[in-house]
Image 1 (spheres, rainbow, N blue to C red):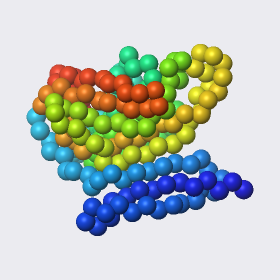
Image 2: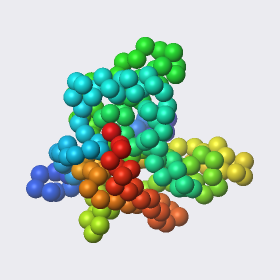
Image 3: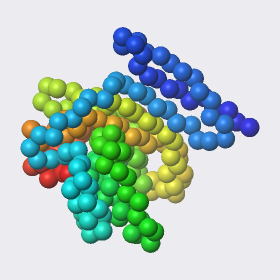
Length: 214
């Protein structure tokens, strides 16, 4: 039996960093890095907000309406040739859950208001499945003017890409990068920075685009 080490980094008391070496038996390795404590996001005017009972039901209706409401608005940076990027918000998590259940002809069991609010927002980043430029993701951060917003947690896992245009399979890495709500508040344009073995790529979300997200 293969025993693959997985590294878990988490912040300890007084900013100290504790490294734990875990062993995954018979499962794909995953590396989780807790970078810092999550900040509380403020609701602000427009844009992504924490859910209440009313907006939770609106998210359910969005999921029933189909992909144009529940999926498409959260697929970011479509011209990025290396990565597929999906934004997860409290609203979109509920909507996507209902949409997927409906697509699979299953009973919808959307996550609760408390659950999705506690998860805040994050970016699912995967290698582009239909591009020769598909690349592993190593790091993501958000830049607003001179301010750099680092993710609160990072989770990386291996993924096999079946075809990058040359018919060969290759193992790369995908990731989930959690952020506080404030990272995507529609106060000004933001730049999402993606870093992988092939270097840095950026994607700009303007203030108008941020204000339409829920």
